[in-house]
Image (cartoon, rainbow, N blue to C red; front, top):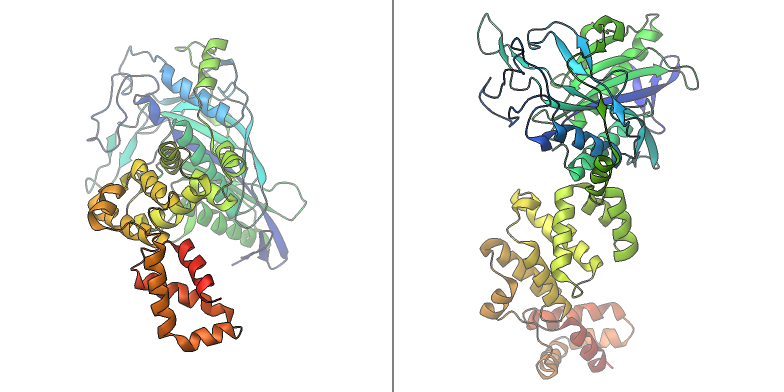
Length: 494
């Protein structure tokens, strides 16, 4: 089997290196609409089979589709977030094929005149520099139903709950050259969709999934024949499918075979792809304009409302955190990667006002809060400590009421009891002291008990200063103001 080279990703075959060319077609369910593309039926995940099916979804005779305005609005907002061209005039087409989970015998999609044109996504793969991945188009289409083969020993059942669900098919250009590129692209795209609010990005529940197009070529040569691996539902599986499929294609070509343009499936248990059917072309589906639907024509007022409704997106937020708040690039990346984290942090900053700096707040969230949540197995939305309580804790550190050590003690109590930090400090006497008399008394005891180390320090072993600080803080149960301790120790040691 061919193997992948680690740097500047290449697949190493018997005849040398091969380059991988990757494009993704991401199907993102428009979850924000709460209703299907051409009917008012619900779209909640986990409903009983066939409990969310209207007469339109079931293709009953005489039923006519009516576009859901919110679905169109969310697709336009998504296009704008991807800096894509919005087509003021677009049209629905019928894609004809016959399958048991497609009641109409055709799917309503957009082939020739999509709602959204070219755009781009900027990614930063862990192994390389920032790069731009082109978006070719976003078209809106209805989903098919679902065949269930495990409900009966000899029959397959059909669940039409997904039939008619609104999908955005986000088609990338073949700009990715490694599994890492594809993983970074998919994560970034998911993050943007979740910021916009058009799709919840839940790949496990099927509201976002990817068709993975892979081909290989000798570096610098023309594109090879591609295969399409359908409905891959996690970032990790997308990357595994690319690795396997690229190596498989190299083996086929180097053994004298040829790559067949086909549709494949990914087996996550075996980590491999397998053939599903030959790849159809557009003419196989006999596309033609849907006669039941008028073209979509978008006016300026509608576009302006969509544009004005967009939130601050992750790249802009990250730049603001770095440039205006002085937050490190790493912290800014972590805080903006998921919309829930960004919202929590924004709420913390709002509650803190000018009492706490952005840098201190970001360090606390990423080290203390995230560490605690990971230990407890909780998401940030499930945090026992609210943004308001977190801001209050940080304010107590900023004004000198708590030392860093005491703040950690108070935080642990907050996690357990959900009490406010001020109440914990008051009830348990955890307030930091700057009483110079009390601190000087403890310093005298520490120096007397460690006379040999005092001599070593004075002889030039300056590293012992930290030992004296630690012993003093220990003697005062962590309640001494560290700055005052440092000043008084320097004075006492001459």
